[in-house]
Length: 386
Image (tube, rainbow, N blue to C red; front, side, top):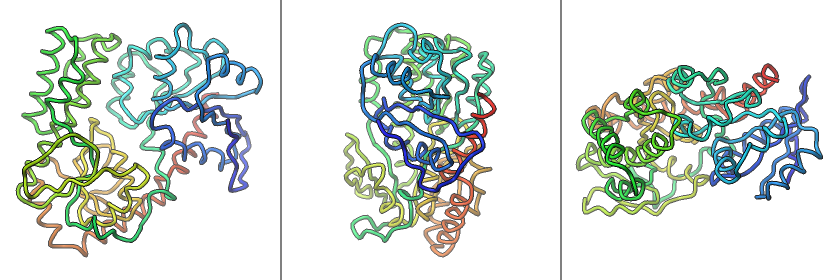
């Protein structure tokens, strides 16, 4: 357990004592958000080790917390790990959850904490918020990617071994492998629903929102819907990345990320994966950084990471992204993969323009989109909710 230091000396009129608990694989990536809350002037207690359930209960009993701030992944793991009433509900401590993936695919769990104590779900996609509100959730708030730390993602010197014109930071697995992995034990109707989604994604060459596609036929609060949504997240990523590689044609493409796919395409160079906090060297060594977004409208966090690094991004068009990074000024977007080859060729011929756009993106990030900015928004909302 750690009490995070206030590095700024800032104070707020209503400081909160905030509990946050590590319970997920990517919690360390989200930790800069907690530091930002401490730097605002709140007292943040961060439990960064796994405890037995009684250990969490004793901590809450011992300290007078105002609210708990949980990552969505940690909340899922709590609900999966311990039977019965969620311990924060049991102890009467208000809490909020911050999401970096789509909470609709977890409604089979979340339906059990659709309560007054769960004061807010903070979600990065406006369509998902509309869908949740349509399902009766009245405590959902928009918060674009909220954990990007400018001390981690920043301009660095290019790395010779990574220097290239075109790169894609992504895990690459085959669609067939993902299908085998995630569909074990499925009924025929579940497979049919999933196959239809994959066919829609194949035809449209774009992300298909699962709730939009099958929400009328499947109860979103069931385990079956959750399984379909989870599988579709990984299967659609595999398909989309396969389609992107195809769209690039014979242009040299460098892929940096873990995964099991092997390729016989001479133009595709597979590099070893890099840790999430060590991606700026790739971004800064690449003229054009590609991005794909597994959300219906959201601005993917990779866009923020690349912008923070002062690098150029070519990303798929998403409505929410357009207000966060201005098209053709701070980022370049393609509306379909069919547009991608011409855009790549255009910007390969215009490195000065790439640099100008990249610099504008970094300035926008530093002015509006750091973890500190997002946590200031969250802080104001917490005062309203509590």
